[in-house]
Length: 140
Image 1 (cartoon, rainbow, N blue to C red):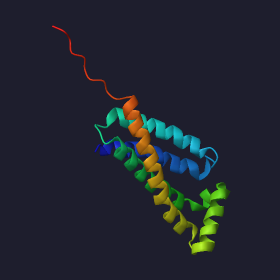
Image 2 (image 1 turned 60 degrees about the horizontal axis):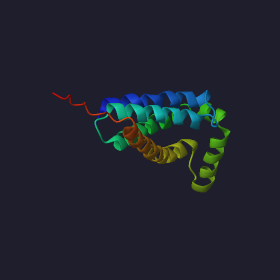
Image 3 (image 1 turned 90 degrees about the horizontal axis):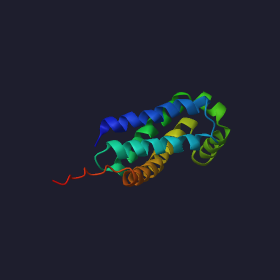
Image 4 (image 1 turned 90 degrees about the vertical axis):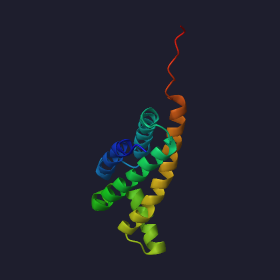
């Protein structure tokens, strides 16, 4: 495993965590994540020595920690800018008695696992497209 690569790529998630608190709206966020996933998949394909799916999966799990932590630390600002998400958290409060923080902690790992599967698949596909070509043997 290339832990330096995994941690380095997860910094995209840290940047998105802060950006989604107040700068990036819910309707633009998926486009930003798609761009990040495509870049990460390419970089995993080029820099990992195998286990492409696992690299992508682990990047997303670390992203999940970053995003959940930042959103909880800045929950007031996050909720002020994400009415749709607040509505979902209110439903969780009604159904399960969970606070906003508890709801974020409950949902975060599922988002991390789902996005990990997506990024892992992207990384595998990218490894097929951008795989390193073996060196050509020269004729004597």
